[in-house]
Image (cartoon, rainbow, N blue to C red; front, side):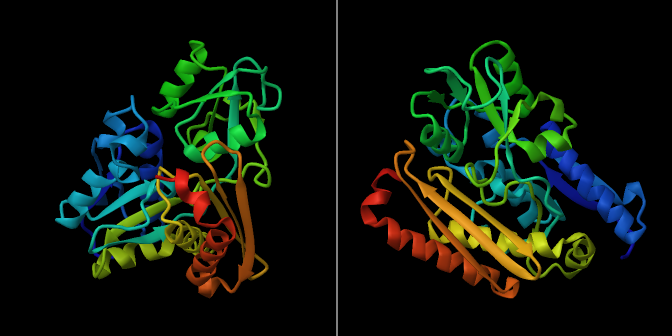
Length: 309
């Protein structure tokens, strides 16, 4: 790589900055580049600024990436780093996901104030979550609980929990690990009963199509197994028109050379769910995810999606 300064765009929260510095560190190690070859550019996104309403009411997942993608498109940034689960399935023209770092633990973590787990919470307890997937899965497990929308950075949600605004909340274990905050977890949910969001636990890099220099820069840090898994999960999400308005879970894993996938779609109130499992060649990851989405859509029937407005 020629020695110049690469501009990495990121959101400004503590977790986003951790992820940006992780990417920078891996790129430095891969190419023997110095610290001054990279500038981390922090941008405020609309999704970060508006925290008093559900994402579905203010524009969806793209609100966490819009400002970054604008500067990436016009050349002010060379690449942007994101949490993969925050990425819309349709990216702006001229941009693509060029690399995925090796995935962290995909499980959801319960942080309980009045009880350690969802099962142990008393009837009527308040559980806060910003994710429709988590909300639907909680209601599926415990329809007696009061599940409310609960947004903000990790630190904000934990502060609200400590203040007694909710009895428990759920966060991605991967993010807590990256922040060195594993000790706040009171229970880890298994992926069979509480499947993760597509992309959960994986950091992705977004760059411009046709920028060969940046493609060469990120190629060594791309984790092939994570890349295949994410292509499958995102294809499943895309086939179902997935967004922040839709409760969808999906997890692909490379096991002994075979890509295995399990997915779930739920009604927002958790009253009905449909699951799908599939496996195939990782080279055909997109086809595997697309076909799984098509199959589960047919199984559920048109009426199932009436609540997904």
